[in-house]
Image (cartoon, rainbow, N blue to C red; front, side):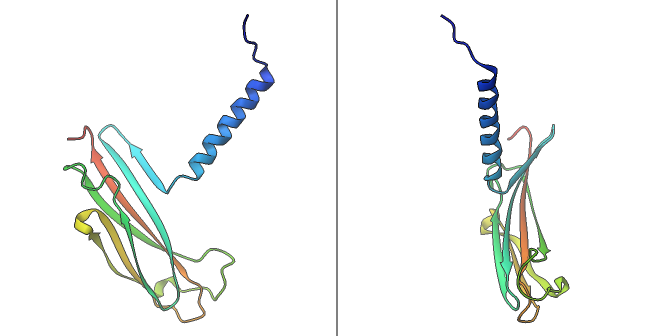
Length: 140
């Protein structure tokens, strides 16, 4: 006695599996990675809003921090405009200054401190910080 699978049911199951995979990928944290023959690159990203006249720090951990002795670490930051529809006047991104940017906590995090020099009533700007780890392959 064999089990017969109807084509319509197979298509429905395939659609549910595909939707589940897409939903789980969309809800994953902002973690990116690339692999080539010699190294593995991993990135973690975080974004925070900074109100006009305020200063704020954001620390992002390096992926696999201090796990491999021959890994290289770097960090980057970008000041982004507010999302469309945000209340307040449009900020001048040139008035936003990076006060400090360096590895902290013994080299396991990348921290950026930023001051938003825009006047009160201006929309908050966004700060994006990216911490990158490059691991040479094979791991040693």
